[in-house]
Image 1 (tube, helix red, strand yellow):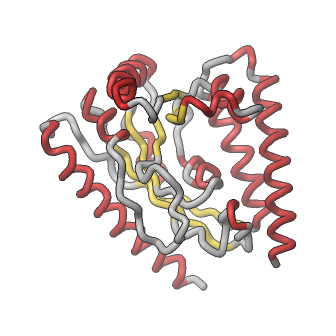
Image 2 (tube, one colour):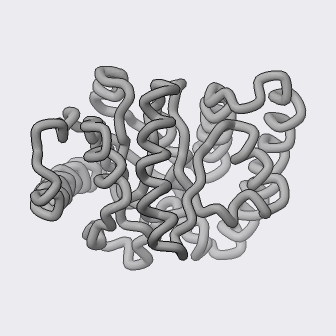
Length: 247
């Protein structure tokens, strides 16, 4: 099975590279338009499901379009997260990534051309200033921004969320933007690219109701963040139980 999963991983990498190259070349006339994200994610999501053998189900997807601009947050389990969580993201959706991404061949080029946003996590002062700049851009361009608040992939794949980082919440609080949580069922044993854990199976993605931030004082950001995390954990537990019950 590991050999088969390794082959799947290689096919995914080749496919991702080809799709990104096509988006770069064909999308040049639309430089900076986030619709290129929708094109890439739609194609790669279907390609991933086909190669890995994932049966993807989306729940309450209509809620993702209920507010804009907004900050979309999801749980982070694998480099393939964007194939599944991204499948429910709106057309006017961009990602926030580390500034170094732009120097990665092909992937970095695509990230730039599709109008995604950058932040320097190594410079705390720059990060604070950049948060305000990002918030301004998000409102001006009327964007939805997708961020993984755990900050890094949960390597345990145990269905438990890692502690959240504040970046997504600082951006939301800066302009009173709503938070829209998205939870993806466990990918462990199904679709974890990094460990060649690509056996396939059911993956469910659920969009939760938007959560307003505009009337919440800045001093309560930690409590707000923890409440959102607890809500997502509760929904994730239910989702995982539902998926497991189908097995």
